[in-house]
Image 1 (tube, one colour):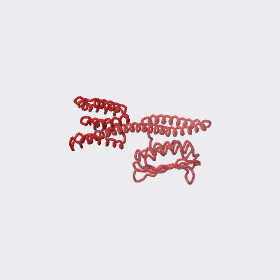
Image 2 (cartoon, one colour):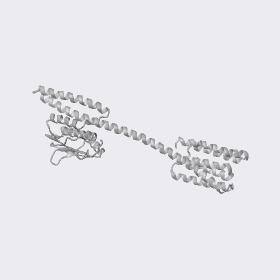
Image 3 (spheres, one colour):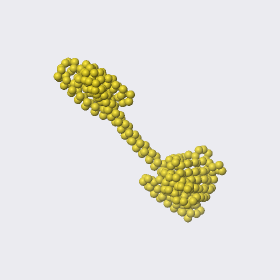
Image 4 (cartoon, one colour):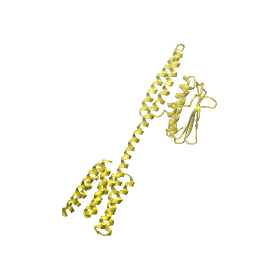
Length: 348
């Protein structure tokens, strides 16, 4: 039970009316009823005990039927705590016996038909309103908890996205640097100038990687298709793989351009790392709208198992989140093929 329900304790002030009536018509039984009802009410409001709530209902009902008059307000107090403590909607049915006792006490007091109806209705509403208030409190608490959980999940998702982006970025860059370092090792004994050029490329790639990592910290998501195609030409050439690019020189939306740039990056990284290919073809088909389909295919050995990995897995998540199509696997004619299709208005 919530601590807010303890705020209903102030309704004990209604016992002032039975106290005044008892002072006017003193008796030990009346005073005992006043003390018992007051103690049970305060204990129940503080402890939220269903047992003492039941005792309170029985004591209030007995006092209302025995003494009538101001003691019927004890039924109102019992109804208030019933609505505050009982959480589920079937519990509202517990107000029915209290309402019936209020009606019976009013009939015994011969207060008239309309007053009898008001007595019953007043007790029922006195319990129904706190029940509604408590349900609202619980709903608000659940919404706050849900908002905190959504915020936590959003932070986790952003951390996952950031780590995935860094993996994609550095995985590609380091793969290119490894290839060029191998070229330096091969060229150094016989062609120092060519080896120096490759070493200069490694230095430049390292500088670019540092810039890109810094950009990632501030929300980097991709360099775009043209930049990735240019990087792919250099990386594949250094690896001894011939690249062919086919497709129209059509402007793309920033979202589509960024996501296709990621596709080129991951596709080329896969070619360099795993394919042992001699040629690679990148084909772009642009639809009438801003949708597009990109294919990266090579003539290598393909893969022996399912195409997987953090890079391709992250790309798949981005494409599917944008409502696009993602396929990756061995091509029927040999080699490996990566295809990314994006609808109009795709947002990575």
